[in-house]
Image (tube, rainbow, N blue to C red; front, side, top):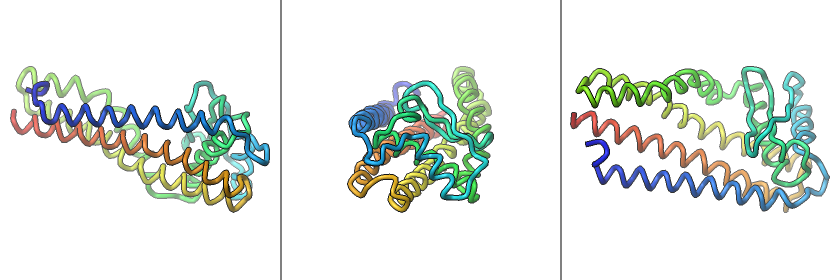
Length: 226
């Protein structure tokens, strides 16, 4: 029944396509502005360091990591990790991404509530993503409602994590754009380009949250039918 509920299945497929389009768009936008050097010649790592110091933050480290668009801030170790194309490159895209991740470090330093909640939800969200399908499908297969409900409960933590990710990401981008302008990291024209990079990245989180919600609704509908 789960696989042949055509209406909800088509919605889920549509959301998956939306996520794919958002992912391709962020890569395309990043690659476009990764080819354009910023006027100050500041690398991603230098921009992150400068932004931290301007905000009086001295206990956050900056590290290089492998991969492409693997950049993130780890609040547990207070570390900004920048991917190879961002860390040492002086493009508009590199500085935009680095300043966005620095925005998360500033959120952490100032006690931004949605970031604290998202960090607290992370262990439950990770457990939920691992335990969801075995429990849910075992409940469906053997007609055990309690397993279905536990699977849905676990997945709900993952959905909550995705929902709290949205204000965290949008706020980090807003801080980055404001401070890049305020501190003269990018010029006004370059800031417009940075906005395009960060907006494209934000849409991937919107698509991920929508897909998680779609999956949760589909599971709830199936549970009611069972």
